[in-house]
Length: 411
Ligand SMILES: [Ca+2]
Ligand SMILES: [Ca+2]
Ligand SMILES: [Ca+2]
Image (cartoon, rainbow, N blue to C red; front, top):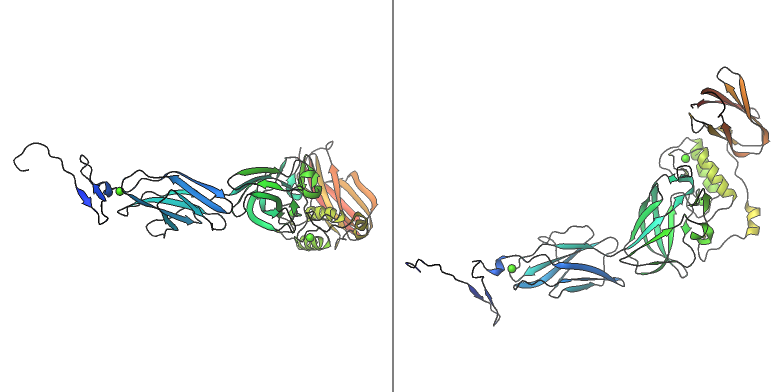
């Protein structure tokens, strides 16, 4: 070429040991096509096929393509430089017949004949999503229509006996009563949705189950009507139907054993994230006992398909109230308050109860309660709309016991 001033073009032809297979460089580019990594695969999708996952994508158009590397992982990242491919195929579809349990991700990358690996495309494995709406009796405030957010565990249970738990997931049930749950293991089918919460009665969805589909989502609202729970087993508070609270030991029934746990923690002034905190305010006290006592009195228990239920005739025999360990009076709540506040108190035995409100100077303002009362848990309601702001004293007399509480009316 020396001495010739005109532009010269050249191309390189590589001949492989495979007969008839050659590779040519691009004339104008000046580089071999095999110096480039493949591009990322296009139109990568994953569809459920029973328990299997079927991956597919569009075949790359590069002339030096060799194969596709497939990886999977429980985390959303993979390093193709160090990871071992789960499968290596030349086609553009792959069926994983033994998917990973739980949340998982798939990755696919194209590889050319020179082992250049293209960018990795990734997708989550298909899951069945359920958008739940539910409220918890003790945690729900009907004035604000909100609840204290807490963790729930939701199961998918078979609709045929023995109604086994097929899949489970934990989720946060929000103040607005919403939880989005993803099930990774169950195949498309009909399932009961079952909610477990640390101190509520396990609650099953209505008779017959719900159609849950892998790769799709459904919504289910427990709170709209009683019939949304199996056996109508929910408690109405305002416009919401709530999961029954009080099953502190999670044995499926609210009874003495739950009350005993709560009463002991209450007696010891326990606080924090406890199963005995039935109303979710971080303290174990009268508020928790009152809810549990009421549900225990009403013999609240799990209702589920195939369950052995106590007959109504039996309930009367088993209906017994638990008696408090000692005479106790709670602080008022709210405090300061306007226009009304409440004080809980426990009577270990029947007593003549007098609750009287006094001004800070000791003048009698009004009598709140003056009656013979049965042993158990009681609540005094004090309404002071017509009185001036300030500090007042509430004197409790029950038999030989006397206690005084300070309350602050702030208009
Ligand atoms: Ca290439
Ligand atoms: Ca229980
Ligand atoms: Ca509490």
